[in-house]
Image (tube, rainbow, N blue to C red; front, side, top):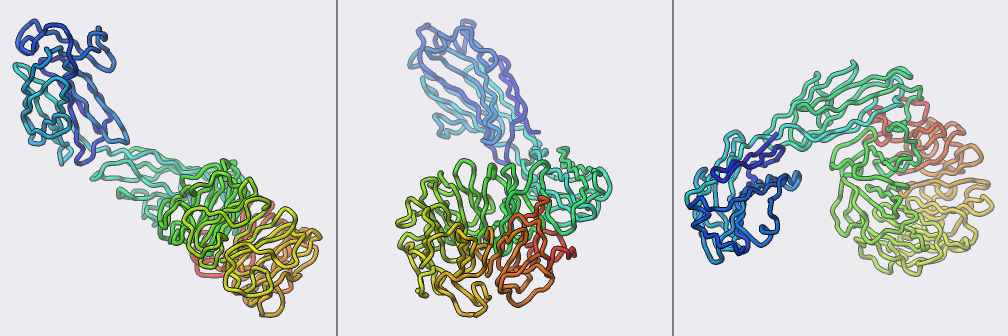
Length: 637
């Protein structure tokens, strides 16, 4: 670790300290202050020339014996090593002198070429004249090789004070933590969370050493390491991979990076193949949501994990680029209570009512006032009372506790609802919807709100009739009432389609029908049309070209089925209509999220199962189906 020490010559000793962090060109500063005037009659000549000088030592741990006299002023001579802001470590020690008012003092500095005097924060070179109330500082620059001590000496009259700075590299990284997995499916590959190695100075050599039980693979920067030892760079990431041990068996692995240790414990569980179990011990999966090429799950402890493509940072792991074929924890996110994924971004509502979003931000869909995509969740501006959220392709919306609606992001089709077609970089109030809304849903390019009386209002893109007003106008920039719909109990939007579940259990849909999302034909339907009877909760997603509903204990789906995303029954291709039982008529489905290329279900056993096109790691099953299609949950590889 890096350290510094200071040594006072004839003035007496100074207290040293350790643990000060320096960069390659960290400026270290010694301080001399001329402060005030005290009525003691002591002259500058007395102070620096004779035995009558009055000297009092002041340190952090040993204050002056006569603070009242000191408070009136004095000449404090001491050193303060100023570390970087992260450590904020200082060494303060001073000798206090009491000069006559108006006296001056000449100070010089010698030693290392980098030693420089400053008066009142201005460089003056190697010599300075000090007057009462002046502040003198001495600055040095740590050595380029981080091995040679840097010294300088300040002289004043017959007295001198030397300052030596011994610099060295901080070669111990910050602590890193692998999250234990207590439910690893036996025999299936499992991956730890990825940790970043930070907190060391430039030029430090980093070595990762893996130890522990057999069967673990060390991964650096996403690639397997051949062996148990690897050299790291300053921005390297480390992860571990293994296969799930036998049910109830626990294996342990340890990774040491320059002496800092992280450990990972994996316990096997009898879990069916092809599913995603909770990645955190003691936390249950409560929700799953899908974007175009990524998916996310929410845990009961408020953490969020995502997987799939990361070209815009939609995984939330702090990076941009690459693919994550297994769940990765979203960083800088706690206390999430709801999540929603759009095309290439995700938002989370927090218990506080605030909202954070991450991923693509080309149109302001993250709501932070910029168009900068982010691999780290950012706080949505001017929104602290969100009761519910839903995310479209490139826009986002929130229902407030007061019953109003705010939206932000892409607005070319009027999907923000503020009577404009300009993008909204921060939340904008939806026109004429400040109270009375009980539910919102966002589709790819349109948005709808269910009112307290059972009516539905929609706005945005209507080229396929998704607004439900009997025509195919290009865009509706303010909310309009859906024709003939007055007893809605739930709404769910997809890609240019809208659906509503009515009080009697009937499901009606409207909009694009090219994939039989509304009927057996292929012409867009511009008003609500019956799709199913006696259905329960509806499920879709902003990029869904179809929908699903619970019917008794079974799940029924309809619409586009290119990758078996609608059926999950072992057959891909074509369309599904009328609605038919999906996933082999299994009766343990809690909820479903549907996207353009894949779907995911939360099952009663507490695991998530995904099916459809596995490219980009959409299914979250590591190497399985990365270049193929999973057409049923019985298919494991």
